[in-house]
Length: 374
Image (cartoon, rainbow, N blue to C red):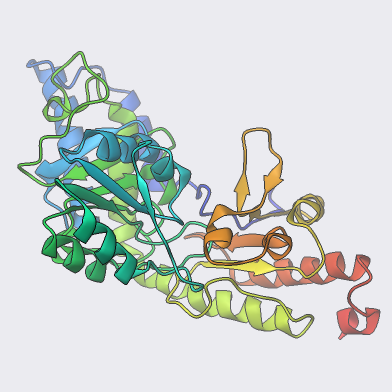
């Protein structure tokens, strides 16, 4: 796979070497972190050190971090366990939020992918009882960064709690949970260079979250089960490395913008969410008249890994609910693919994608051969 180009880092990014080392070292140890003997205390120390590293990455109190099996579990724990009566989620949330609680009500977004703040204010004004608002930090498909500070301001005016799915934003942009005024935040290790199978919910002190898993006193009695010490060790190491690499991630916008400019020399493409502030590593772009399903197969044959907006469990590409919420028509939405750079991407990766894009587009007959050659 050395000659292949991986541009699907928003799905999962490459595990960082320091995380691999941390996982290996933890696996060499024996000890349950709930045990009081020296072996158990050593395992506990690994977990607590990871809390410190993750807290530093996102500006959170380490004591507020609860380890879970993944970001999806963290979202479910927040959306099902928070002590509230009403749940409001933006229409462009990940399915891990949209499907977490059947009582959730949708908040509209505009054509740029930004949450409708006036609609949020109306919903909260009409609500009886306490409410929870769940808004992602950055969209996984378009990279659009949501106006979290404004959401928090409106929510607090109505006495509502705010949860933020920061799975895509963590490690790609600076985050300070305390400054943002969030009550709950979800994270996932494998999105920032840690191993798959471990996540975290950060729940501000004083919030009594009803557990989904019961049977033990781990994680402040909010998440029963022996902690995944090795996974958590890798999570902490990746978070530490990601903290030091935030400037490098911000510079990926240069490659992203160059990719867009080069493709626009070939065809009148649409970049979804372009008018909004976006993650530096992400672009969701159309290929006029060519389905995403066709593109994915062609890119894969060319040795380039990208993704479409949404893929169901059967593997069939479906129109993105994110783009639909932004007012994009079905045909155009079905022509969109997502390109996402990562911490170990290389400068030439974007141009390799553009070269493959041009060849795929030319085969449809939509682009003149001379344009491909130019």
